Image (cartoon, rainbow, N blue to C red; front, side):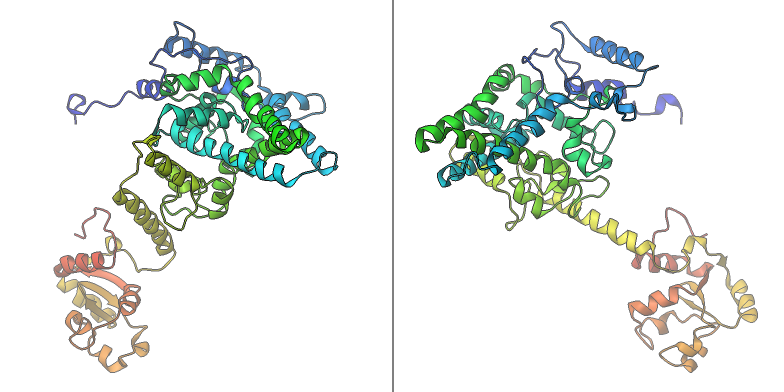
Length: 486
């Protein structure tokens, strides 16, 4: 085929530029300390005021040159002299240091836990949790539905209370995760182990060699996302620690309890629950839709993540506002979104068609069956058998009298004659002949098991029976792989 007759191919460079959103001028949105839950140099997609793809490519080239002859700390072995350089200290303080302080005050008895504070902390935990799953995740990261500004404002405020970074940072990291799942560019690559995908990816310095981008122009177009990102530190401190402490002080006269339990320990709990989506949801459970990648469905993970445990479904159908599609599966986030739609706060709820979902299920079931099938002896494939004409069959029958034809296929039954359930005499009468009609109901309507046993005795295909052999193979689910038998 000539070059001019070929259909034009997609330009992969241009396609990746589009996927990264690097073809667009971006609204510059920054906050004082950058990302609070990840390394800024891995997720920074802020463009210079007049930036374009040339700027991004230049920055990438600078990184490449920088580490051409010098290894990044993430590529170096841990030693007593450099161990501290491997650590992302900001995240270490936020996700390990502060929680340890809270746990100390709780378990030492210095700040007792009262019932009212416990109930408030659980309630506040739910507000923060659903703001991450329904807001950060399904609304902003995946655009699985649309939300009115009061709902988005609610998610922005209480999402910040979970101390998992801004919507802009969280959404961008998550889109990168979906774009590069189970690769070196996946921020929480599950292939690197349970601990790494759970927390290690945040606590260690990431390798800038694997930086990645995704298009988040729709996020920076949202004024609520921009406002929250610019003022994230203040909003986070207010919503995560100051507000619960003040509310507990006002209603229960327990400022310290509100700070420790409604603030620090609640944040620790919701962070750990969210981290389980990156770790347990890629290790524990089934893969009913596809097993090429690590995401799995598991009701245990769903219990601790507000329904996000049906992760295999989610990675296959990411813009579906549901994670659980069966009535008995636990997905309170789905219920919250649907409930919000009933009062007009959410709209345009997206669902994949049932046909597409069933296709995924059937394809995965077939893949599992094919794997099991590959370990069994189904007989020599027809495409590997010689084709004999009538004269060749007669010749071979004289040399080996144990040959019989069924459905155009020659079988050597000499070692099976005494084992035949219908009797040795019956099989002896078929030797050197075509026993197709007798085999298929003329004498016995043989079972599927009989067909399978017979298939293990194949030695050739008769030329006059090629079509019959092909039809028989198709009924057994055998593939001729585009080959002809003649």
